[in-house]
Length: 132
Image (cartoon, rainbow, N blue to C red):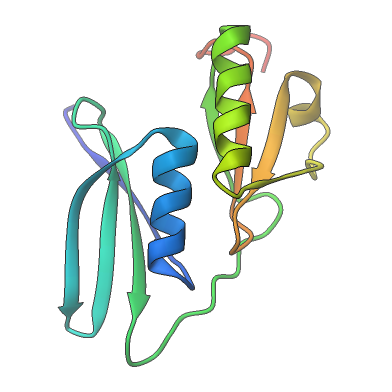
């Protein structure tokens, strides 16, 4: 199967969310749109990956993001140096480190939250994780 995955999320501040994810996760802007039937958006990712993020804001009826503590994006970073560097970047970009709702993610990972409450886990593990 050669499917491509898009993770779409409404955000309160398109420019700020774009900068946080671009700088914090090292993503690139793959595309943008303005006032497409009332929506503005940005796609972020890497050209070589089979997934990307889409952040949107609705001009006419803004959607308030409502993530739960268990709505997670988990990035597996097996190398300690790579994970440490990612921690520094994500904090410098404006994410805040938070305690994970699920204690599993605290064992070998760290959880971070963006300004809308969306959470990211940087997990020091290889995928597939045979311990799961």
